[in-house]
Image (cartoon, rainbow, N blue to C red; front, side):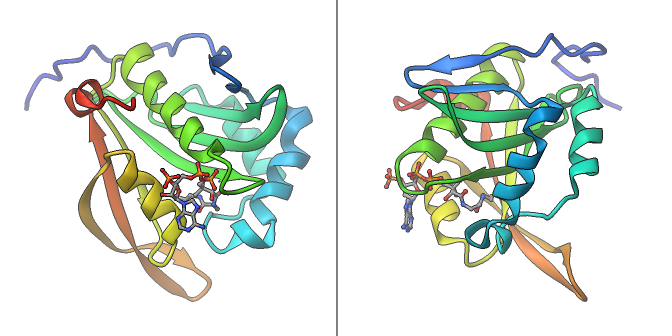
Length: 183
Ligand SMILES: CC(C)(COP(=O)(O)OP(=O)(O)OC[C@H]1O[C@@H](n2cnc3c(N)ncnc32)[C@H](O)[C@@H]1OP(=O)(O)O)[C@@H](O)C(=O)NCCC(=O)NCCS
């Protein structure tokens, strides 16, 4: 058994606002859940992200290893992001879900940059990873453009109705983050 080079985080740090220019991530509250569910169910997003009930999101707000954030642009909510594994002893954070209301304005890109900053600079983690459904061209472009490395395919890893969908797995390591001029 190997010893992790990063210390296990038993109590995640207090959640707070993370800002860069006009973009912010702030902790989701129960008052935001109607917005979160509406964004998730929007026809432009529903095909690409898991569909949760408001109650599942509420439970996620309470999980210490989860970060549930509202993405804001100039103080207005433009989407949400959900991260898991903030206490992972292997220092690997999962960007479980991100959805933006008004696409193609750079909000998704800016939000992922803030997530990366949180992962590598605030948590001091080693790896940020995520999966993308096949055919989600916008998301595939986004992660490739930001320098995420495509690791391969997680075969039939997500249930969709009666079938299981294979997902593209992407990751970024701390040294890649530090070497990237755009991050
Ligand atoms: C994927 C998503 C988060 C990206 O956010 P966004 O605000 O629309 O994207 P941005 O405007 O920041 O653009 C980021 C990159 O996406 C790609 N992109 C943007 N619009 C695109 C389009 N119409 N077609 C293909 N790629 C596109 C580009 O590579 C762009 O980078 P560039 O401007 O440097 O070329 C957002 O579109 C979304 O919520 N999609 C539905 C839910 C989803 O797929 N979530 C991700 C699951 S992993």
